[in-house]
Image (cartoon, rainbow, N blue to C red; front, top):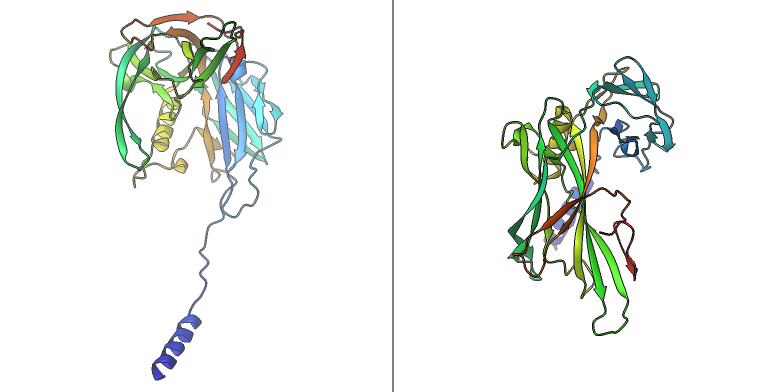
Length: 348
């Protein structure tokens, strides 16, 4: 009995010492976030403004509206930004290659300004080609055990020149697989023309001075791989008719190259103590009216050019050569879809 009483008294004593701990969390948030891509192509120019949100913030919306956005050239000429939707700004005119510009943003009484950047020369591709590869990958089976498997496909590469006016590049791309299906052993059966897009944009694809294989030229820049086995991506029984590869090349500055390389380090972080975090990646925009205020993001002034290629290779006999030809028709291509007894106008 005495033992039981002691236990009860001890429990009461310990419970009376319990105190709810409220950690002191610094109220942060409200910093300006600038996503800005300005090129010689008016359809790809935008400035998007938002603000970071703090830990205690209930609202998830951080869009900045009503700001005054300007592109200012070295002579003081102004290209005013036009707010098309909340927080999204565009420009009626495009900046000129070789000219210097800075971005100005006036919001909530504060003036933010980027560094002055020169738009690089229009980029170009010297050569576009492919090579057959066999890659070993590890896939987790139903039991959770990694199993080695071999993936075969065509890797796509390009060569690009390096000049004093344009030596750094960034690439966006998409591969559109064209497939055809006919119901077997069925007279007058309809033909289905379908297409499916493949992406490989987990990180920014960059090319610059650090990756030279020969002075004055970037060689064998890897873009993506087109697989031979597409059975999991298209209708059962269909055959691949070919691929359309859409390539967007940007001529960038050294600063843009370095910034996106830091973003790649953050995107591929493996949880190491020394992995960079997003707040350690500073851009090229500062607050002119209050130096204590931070602006995240980057004023990216790029020149750009689009390329398209039709690629055809045999999935049944890999020894057959690959056919590649450039396409000059730049119609819009939806990500995926299919038509019966007809194919879209952009079909190759």
